Length: 72
Image 1 (cartoon, one colour):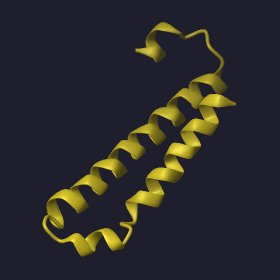
Image 2 (cartoon, one colour):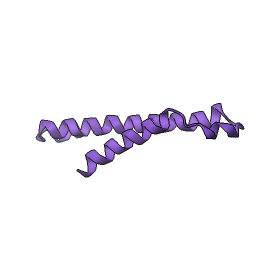
Image 3 (cartoon, helix red, strand yellow):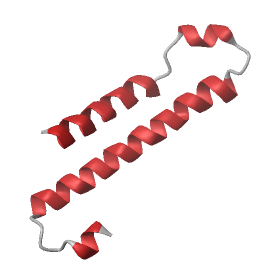
């Protein structure tokens, strides 16, 4: 919708919008993986909480990138 209506914006702004959208989508996917890992795959296995699944730091990294891009 953004690319159809605001065609007069600079190319850098369009690239920034696309990058934020991609990183935000990755963040949601990583969060879904975290929830699936702890709540479905390891249901009833409390020892699973001792170990951090790989998608947790990846989610934090992508969220930090989005925050930095939006607030700068």
